[in-house]
Image (cartoon, rainbow, N blue to C red):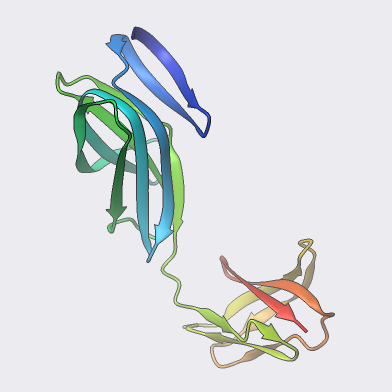
Length: 193
């Protein structure tokens, strides 16, 4: 199909937006493109239904969603009518939110761009235990005093304060139920019995 403009390619499980230059043949049918955190890295995965003259994919990352840098290249299948699966692990992303997109490159140098996906990378080493408790929560891995908030399952703030690395948080005055402990930007789920 030869066309130009911004197009949405839909399938039952996915919608992908491609920016297309004038009189360009759409090179691939993208079924999915996802990003998730895996061992403090960003795991990118995508699948295609068909590929036509697909040289491959430039993996592009942005920290603000506007300025893009190519961080890797993954070879494509060339010409294929079979489903293809791809994956890339970004081990160089900084802590915080990262934006990713695919720059699909044809053998003739033509390019098209996927929709943008995001992932939040955290190098957090904190843990909370026990996750089922009646009296106290212990926090491991804290390096300095931090603010905390405990909210119920409806998001209502119930307790807040400052916790030191060697302190525990008393939860004995809470009713039985599911709660969330937020320390800085990290959230832990626990059950008060």
